Length: 221
Image 1 (spheres, one colour):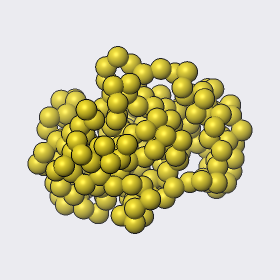
Image 2 (image 1 turned 45 degrees about the horizontal axis):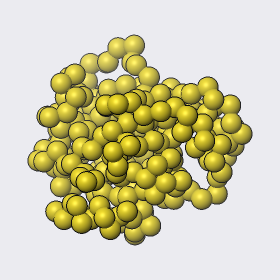
Image 3 (image 1 turned 135 degrees about the horizontal axis):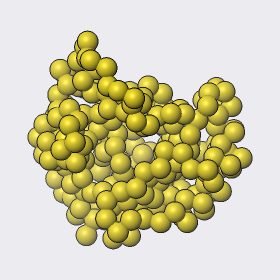
């Protein structure tokens, strides 16, 4: 699949998550068994258009891995396990959290990533991103310094992914505080700082427009 995507996107460098370039963004997690979560997420479905994101799903939270991740991976911190399923093919925006995120590819998918330290005065050229193919069944940790957004699909069927985060992340803010520094202008939801491309839905809703250049598209056919 990765070679096929490379052929369809000759102007983009699509890398494997086993590539050394991925190491500054995160790592592959092969010590945890996500099989039960994967089977549950397969039942959630993919919308006909757009994406659906559920921050915390009761069925996923009832699995044995939920307690293990809370106790071991997050050091006894409360967590949430949800899913993001959909049809994205574009960069659109990038977000980060203050704490690692675990993404599990229920289907093959592509992640477009960047480093928070490349944001300068709330501006980030889209050429600063790197693109990684994540094969079905693979779990990855994305560090708190890693900019990311919804995965991109690699087939007409769309994508499915499991998302693990510290509890409360991506929930609505009661109010957005008046900014006292540049980063405050990126605060979008609880434990979520976001920078958008001008042609994206988040930008149309008032998110900070700071991704410059092309709104990268992953072609899959």
